[in-house]
Amino acid sequence: MLSGISASDHVVQANIYFLSSRVTLFEEDWQYPIESFLSEAGGVIGLWVGASVLTMLEFVELLVGLIAIGFNIRSAKCHAAGRADSRELVEATAAVDKAA
Image (tube, rainbow, N blue to C red; front, side, top):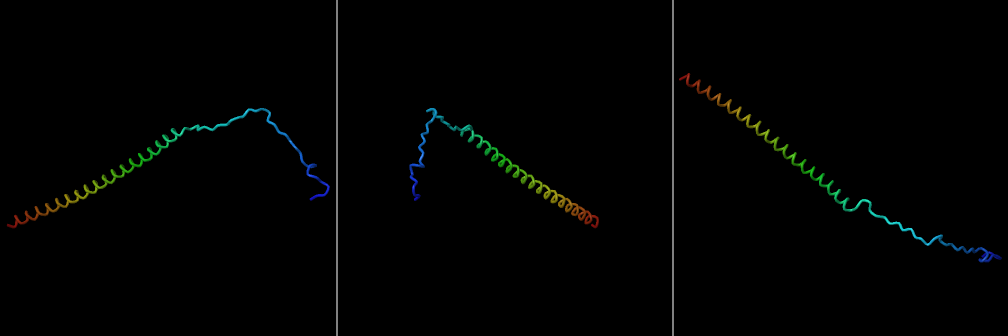
């Protein structure tokens, strides 16, 4: 390689020692226990599912109310039409009685 330069001229030996033989151990622990996480997640899911069920029940109640209102309007029209028919029948009968 390079002439006149040996490997021993460029090698340094360094001895590195620790100041103390103590070891610092770092441990990680869950600050939020898994039981707390699961219980809170279950509570939130239960809240949303419960709200969804209540919302569906409210929609069913709304539909039943609208159907009931529709039947009441229809029956009121039928009763009104029936009263009009009976009035016409009474008037026609009265006219026939007068003519006779």
